[in-house]
Image (cartoon, rainbow, N blue to C red; front, top):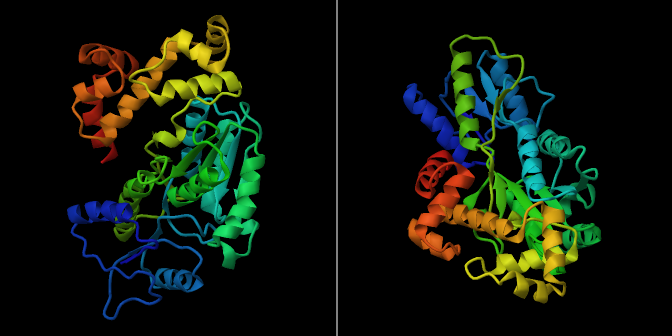
Amino acid sequence: MLMIDPPIPQRFDGIMRFARGHGWRITLANRLVRAPRGWSGDGAIVTLRDDPAVARFAEGLRGRGVPVVDITCHRPEMALPRAIPDYEGAGRMAAAHFREIGIRRCVWFSTEWSAVQAGFCRGLEEGMAGVSEPVSRIVLSKMVSRSRLDDADRFAKAVGTRLVALRKPVGVLTYNDEDAARILSLCLDVGIAVPEECAILGIGNDSFVCENQPVPLSSVNDDLEGNGYAGAELLERLMDGEAAPAAPVLVPCRGVVARRSTDALLVENPVLRKALSILAADLARPPSMTQLSESVGVSRSTLDRLFLRELGRPAHAELLRRRIVRAKDMLRDTTLAVSDISAECGFCNPGYFAVAFARSEGVTPAKWRRCRRNWCG
């Protein structure tokens, strides 16, 4: 029996993938507090959250000797066998991504707070330790009453003032992609440039949410399909009589899916920040260094020194890095031919594109596309 809320398709996909290979018969009992009439199953997979009736029902099943596996950790005080995403690992992956793009100060945002949000935030704090200012936490439920969590005006007043006051540039990690979309909308409303001043990273990699924003959202793929599969696998072992493991089964996350909301190397120097913004605006037809230096109001030699001092590489190397990043986005998210992507990203010909891409990523563009789609799928 599956009692899973919210009904995230990836979790069901993982459970079904396991079930098909092991002869399971599935009963869906979404948020019921008693078993469906006539149910005499061998085990249950649940997501325990705030509903005490569901928690009591799960405990009642266990009291009758029916194995129960929780695939979240919102109720850590309940001693249930668990298979859960590696929340802290996801936070550390987010920190590594922020560090890669030059972020030295970070903020955690979530609408509410639980052991799950705490795990993500703890990983972010661990990953940024020693290289940044302490991570700030913005938790909406601690700022407004629970009845007002969906109040757009209260949200803008409570969170908007905090975002405006933050020293820029800053990275924001959110509990899920819906929270990331709320932060993005607020940033755009109050005039905070994304990603140049605020890089936003969600968790969950919901492509419907992430790719349908004014600035497409980067997100940590926390592998909820793997989460569902691991929960089913654990339940199978318990139904076969094995003892419950002493610690939760941790499902590794699958990395950061980078989109436009973190597609910038963020620097504090305003001249260099402006120069990078100009470069990013048209990778296919970028200005010359002389034109770029004139646009930002400094000499070419000064701009050369800024690139080397702040980034550790010259402007042409930074341009190539950004072209490769953009090419990866297009390889992953479009069906354009490799030759067309080469032209769109400003490479002089597909052969040079293939050589430059392989030097950076270790494989050709075509092979990277095949591997990435298999990995993400």
